[in-house]
Structures are given as structure tokens and as C-alpha cells.
Image (cartoon, rainbow, N blue to C red; front, top):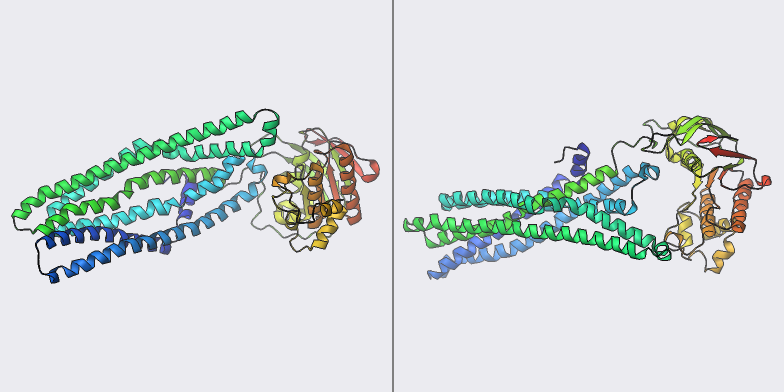
Length: 557
């Protein structure tokens, strides 16, 4: 296995529990053993029948042929069923662990990771891990047991033939490994990254189709998809050719084993060995090599599995990057006293992977029920402050909520007290009801319509057919202002005591922007919640208690 301990941990996690794995291996051994026994018994029966003995001497072999023919298919089916069931069950555990590892990284810890590549790692690379048991461990162990048993049986019939079979198997293993590594080694390792590149190009094309069309860049995006597809196809074709060459090399040694068995068996026939036994030792290698053929291919599957495990390990590292908060082992529960006071003292922060601070020595107090406007140029650190307040981004210095330092509190508790409406709120490709219910899944339709009324969307929703009206993928069927209002309704439904609204007017015209700002601040005043409104533009003074300005990560007013 790889020297990376995290990769080893992922690979161990991908293996099903021993009882499930060994059950599949046992069934595989029974299936493989039945295939070898079927050929051996059939060869003996045909040869012995040509000598025209009494039927009573053939009855046992006839029954054996039927039993092994049925057993090969029956045990093969059970082996596939149990093996895949065990692998698929384990994939659920792998995905759950991976999502649990990714959760604290999002969104700031995943900055710079392209969506298509991330999707490939979460889907295709995790799916590839099932092959660790199905294409690597099970075939290797099954083939090993069947091969050893076949050599032992051959040795009981004719020791010289067992030696020939052993030498042929060793040669096939060496040749298969070398040929497979030469023909498919590079291709096996390149498939996962190239698949990710194709998915990334496709994701960019589909998600930005309207913009690409508007600016005449659609042809270029399609060309990138075509080029990525051709690269993946070329490597997949090279891999398929390599697998064929590997199988051919193994087949050559199977023929050599049969020829060698005849070379040592014919003299033994003259020395008194019966003809049916000669037929068995001559044809048995063909069945043995059919089972053994999975061994060199398992090495190629191992390379693909290891590559996927390495990609998963880099996506979800054990150590959370600097700049991402992590709950302390003794993190305390927090239940704020109504609307808590927010206090920052000498607070600094930086984005993960960067050393230059994005926030510098901030001191700020938000009193319960206060409405504060925060303005500043792009890049001043306003969004970073919002992420620190919601514990998406770690900080140095003091950040207290109701007098308690947030470093010692559970992050989920902090986020139940401090909510964020983002500049570009995400709407799920579902109806309006489902886009609201995840904020409070017990809410009735009347409550949902009530909160929509508070943000000025009740009549609009009813005109569109009610709460079952779809919003489209990423809110494609609603305007920017409507998306902001739906996000605000969602935040009100979640009942955050402290609400941070990041650039609610960024994607709407001036008239709609003014209405959104008024809705946000007047609704907050009615509920007595604290609001930090982040905006590029000024807001009428009667709607806010005070205004602050941020420049270069510092508060200047």
C-alpha cells in the first residue's frame, strides 16, 4: 500500500468487515473450485466413456458434472451478490466519513477547488474504492486458494505435472505483472484525473451555458469538453489494449502448461498411468488459468483504487487547514439569552492557505437589537467578517457571544445564534416550500406564507401557483431580488437572534434594492433581533442605528 498513512486509512475503511469479506471469498472459492472440478471431471468422463465401461462406473462422474456445473453458476451468483452487497454497504460508511471530514472545510476551506473535480472525487473516486474488495482482495485470495488446491490435486495424480503447472503459473504471474505494468500502468493512474477534468469541463459548460452563449464563447467551451473527452477516451483505449495484451500473455502460459503436462504425462502413460488421468492433467491447467487470469488484472485495479484513495485524501485531509475553526474536545453548549451581545476585541483572521491577514485588529460591539450598516470597497474584508461571526473562518483575538468566548463553544450552537444571508444565496432545484422547510422542517404552510408575507413575496408566490411553484436549478426561475427575499424569509423562519445580511442589493436594481433593505431592517426592528447589514451603498439613516466603514481589513469609522 501507499506510504501515506491517510491513504492507508482510507483503504482500510473501504474494506468490508471481515465476516462479510470472507463470506464472499468462500463463495468465490467454491465457484472457482467448481469450475476447475467441472473441467477435470468432464475430461475424465469423456475419456473414460470412450473405453465403453459399464454405466455404473460412470454414474458418479455424471452426477459430479451436473453438480459442478450447477455449483459454478450458483456459487458465482452468491459470490457476486454477497461481495457487492458488502462493498456497497461499506461505500456508505466511506461517504459518511468523507462528508463529515468535508463539513468543517466548507466553504472557505474549499476555496480554489473546482466544482467538477470535487464532484468527481465525491462520486467517481469513492465508487472506485469498491474495487478494492471486488477486483483486488477477493480475486487474489480466491485465485490463490483455488490454484494451491489445484496444484495439490495435480501432484496427487502426477507430481511432474504439478511442477510444470507451478512453473507455468509463476511465469504467468511474472509476465502478467510486467506486461500489465508496461501496457496499462500509466493509463490506470491517469484515468481518475482525466475523468475529473472532463467532469469539470462539462460542469463549466452546463452551469455557465447562458453566459457562454451571450458572449460567443460556447464553441470554445464545447471544444474544451471535446478535448477532455478525447484524452480520457485515448487513455481508456490504451488501458483496454493493455488488458487484452495481459490476458494474451496469461493465455500463452496456459497453453504452455497444457503442453508441458503432455510432455511429462505421455511417458507416464507408457509407465502405467490410465488415459483418463492423462486427459485430466492435460486439460486441468486451462480451468486453473481461467481463475488465475484475474490476478494480473487485480494489480491494475489496485493502481486505480490507490489513485482514487490519494485524490480523496487530498480532498479531505486529516488536519484541518489553518484558518478553519475546529470544535474543541470540551466545547461547551450555548443557549444565548434571547438576543446576545456580540463583541470583538483585537480580532484578526486570514483565508485558509494564505498568510496575509484579511481582517486586522478589529474591535466591535453589536448591542442586542442594534441595526448596523457596514460599508467598504470590494476586498475590504466585509465577507470575511461575516464568515468569522458565523464560525466558518477561524480567528485570532477575542470574539465573544453573550460574554462567552466562541472558541470554547460548539460551532453549531454559534450558527444557531448568528445566521448569514449570503450575497448569492443558494436555492435548491425544488419548489418554494422545500427551499424554506429546511430552515424549520416543522413549519406549516400558513407559517411559510406568513414569513413570505413579511418579506413581500406572499402575493407573488400565490400568483405563481403557491408554495409548490418551482424555483429552478440555482434559482434560475426567479429574479435576483426574489432570490434574496426567499433567502431572507428562510433566515427569518430559522429565527436567528443575530442576522448578518451580506450585500442583499448586489444583483438587483435600485428600486428593488431599496425595498429589500427596508424589509430587512424593519423586520429586524419588529423582532428585536440584531442585524449587521453589509452593503456597498448607503442606507437611509432612520433605518439603522449606526454606520461603520471597513477598509483593508480595518474598521475606519
